[in-house]
Length: 496
Image 1 (cartoon, rainbow, N blue to C red):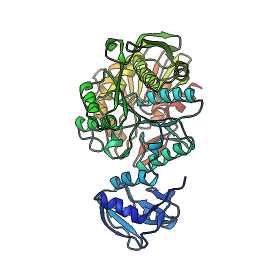
Image 2: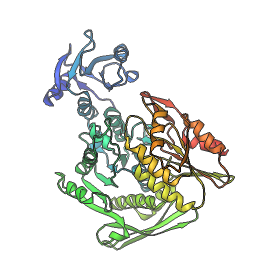
Image 3: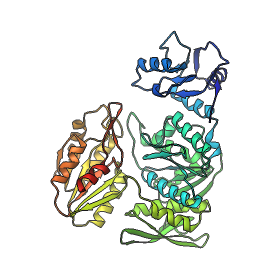
Image 4: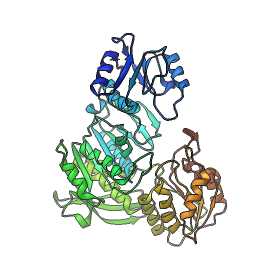
C-alpha cells in the first residue's frame, strides 16, 4: 500500500505536539512517500530520521544521495539540505509513524501480551490456535520472528522500532490477516514504540524485577509502570490471578478510560475467583496433559502440550482462556497447542546419553522455572550450564545467573551473551564473583567454543543447558549484529 504525507502536515503535527524547533522546507506542499532511520532503506522522497547514539554523519550523506528529500534531527547536520529540527527525535518518530501508515492497528484484531517471562511461549500457543481456527496464517510479532502475511523476518527487538512496527502492521492489514498477536515489552512503552496503539485484547502474565539498568529502567517502579501501560491501552484484558502485584494490576485496569472487560485465569487454588483455571497436570510420554475448567460457565476440557514444566501449563492456560474469549473451538485449541514447538524454549535434543536443553531463560524468574523443571525430569543427572549476561543492561541478571544457575549446576561455562561495548571477560568475572564457592566453572569468551568444550568434556547421562540465546543467529557486539550460528544449530551439529 502506498502512503503519502505532505511536509505542511508534518510540520503542523510536530508543532501541535510542541516538538518543532525550526525547519527549512523549500516546498511545504511536497509529499513524502517513505520514512526511514536506516540509510540503506532510503528511496526517492524519503523523510530521513537521524537517531541513535552511534549515528554517524556519513549515514545522512548516504540517505541524501539515495533520494531523501529532507532530514529530521535534534541538531543541524547539513545546510545544503532541507531539514526539520525537533526537541525529541524518538517521540517525533513515534507520533509520525502511525500517521504516515494511516493507523493500521485500528483495522486489525490485535492481541498484546506482556510479562517478565512467558510472552513468547504464549504468543506461539495463541498464534497456532488462531491459525487452526482461521484455516489460514495469522500475524505474529515477537522475540523470535515477525509474520505479517507478506513478510516473514527474524526479530532483533521483541517490539520493533515505530517505523518498522507500523510497516509490519500495515502489511498485516494489506494481507487481511484475521488476528495479529504481539509480544509487548516494557521498553516498547518506555520509548514510545507502541504509542497511539489500542489493543483489542491485552494479556498480563506475571511481573518480577528485570531490565533495571541506566539503559532500560532506573528502578522497578518505572519497569512495572511501563508494563501496566498495556493494561491501560486494551479494550479487554486477561490477567494471571497469581501474578505478583495482582491488586495493583487490577486497580490499574479498573482505572482505564477504556473501561475494559476484565477476565482472570490461574490455578485450581483460585477456581472460585478466576474465569478459567488449570488442574490435573500430568506427564504422558513426551506430552504434558492438563485440564482447563471454569466454574462460571461449567466448562471442562483436556489438553496436551509438547513442552514440560508447570510454567508452560500456566502459559498454555493463558492461551486457552484467551481463545475461549474469542469463541475459538476446543478442537482448534487442542490442535494448535499440540502443534506448538517454541523456538529456543525448552528444546531438548539427545544422543548417546548426552542431552542438550536449549532455552531462552535469561532472568531470575525464567532461570528458576527452567531449572526446577530440569531437576524434576533429570533428578540424578549432572547439569552443565553454558551462558553469561548481556552487556550494558539488566545488570542484576548477573547475580541472578550466579544465584540460580549456580545453585542447580554441577559445572558452568561462562561465556558471551550480547556483550555490546562491554568486555565479555569482565562480565563473566563479575558473574563468577557472585557464584557459590563450591561451584566449578571456567570462562571461555567465544560462545561457540564454550558450547563445544562443554560437549567435549561431557559424559553419558550429562545434561548440557544452553541459556538465553535460543535460536538467535546473532550476537549484539559493539552496536552491530554479529553473525552467530545459534545455540540450537551448534547443539544439533554436535549431536550429529
